[in-house]
Length: 133
Image 1 (cartoon, helix red, strand yellow):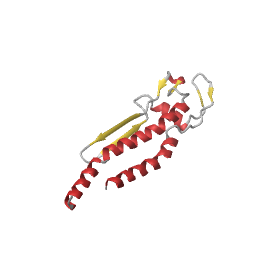
Image 2 (cartoon, one colour):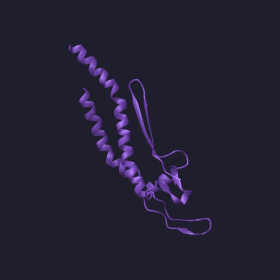
Image 3 (cartoon, one colour):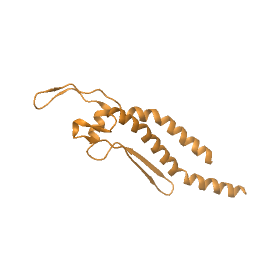
Image 4 (cartoon, one colour):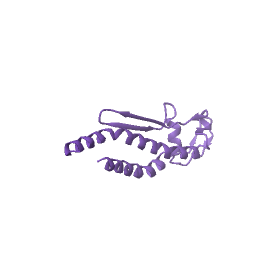
């Protein structure tokens, strides 16, 4: 092959790299979140005190001509609050009926798994790019 052909092949590989790499990164992040969510919710990904609402992890990858964007979101509308309660905890408060709620401790259901998996995701992205160049 010629140098021009090699450069053209490398350019083609680089232009195709973003979408599968972003898909893998999103899958890795979701894969780290799902087991932690199950542990923190008793295995069913639901919180019983709020109408038994299920807490989904929503992923989306959008690919353009030379850019791919991935998103791992906490939930659809209506379940962002329970995700915050799990992650950040709840301060003690008094209900309208005068009952005292002791609050809950932060479980960091979102933050800890993401913090743990991000160095691996970043390393995998760099290694993947290095392989094709």
